[in-house]
Length: 357
Image (cartoon, rainbow, N blue to C red):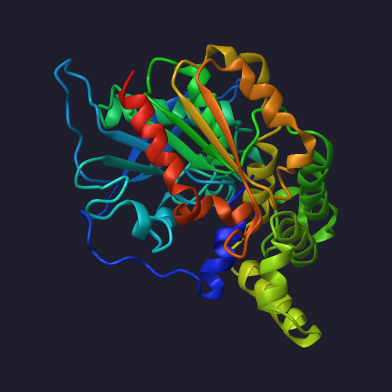
């Protein structure tokens, strides 16, 4: 669903930036003129921010054969993948996605990070974007600006995992392998949709929201939305370990709310959670050609395993496998998606399988 939990752990000190044991990250921007959204709305200048590591390499067929696209979750950014827990276990010399061999592409999706978003000035007049819009915009970034005509791998966490499915059926010949993390290839419904809708409602219920035209953040509504999100992606086991007493629990809650009230924008949050409204890969999964290994964690409250949805839908894909990670002291609920020490061996398996095609 999102990378808010990753941000929680960043705040709590579980991560630190990795050292320069891989190529220096390079940031850039690409502006798409007159981008038309799925809603029919247009944005004169859609800015897409990105970070890359390494250099693209072409194979004998003339196509790039080492590009890896990694997608972040709701409220996240591409740069979060430069954490020690993620990049430190994947991008270094000899590691699975060694950035000296692969061309790593980390993008900020529409509405996120340094890409165009409502808080830039348009507020609630910003076009109502969807996951399909995000994927199509990033396809333009890759093909028109970075000159990438093929991907070795598409992967992502939460929303990025959901977009991995969309990439698979929208551009089925564009990638060799797909690894969605912490996601389901189905319409967002039931509790998941209710929680997202409540996040939006809580913000809009605050009179200080003023239909998006606030001068200061609507603190009451935004606090409620942040609280809803915190518990949506939380890990009961890890939170119990971090806050085993009443005093520690209340202190942790107060610190988290204070921290995120200082960095979150209400309109951006509304748009980010509403962008999933039309997401539903299920009818299109048979179009996916690339090998897929999807990984979820049994303690993920956003994608509860008891629903049995993945087991049913993944059968529609010719070469696909689902891995459900058991709950352990190392898993952290939805946030397990950002810990490759737990699921990294399945990424190695996928790269080996897809290299044989």
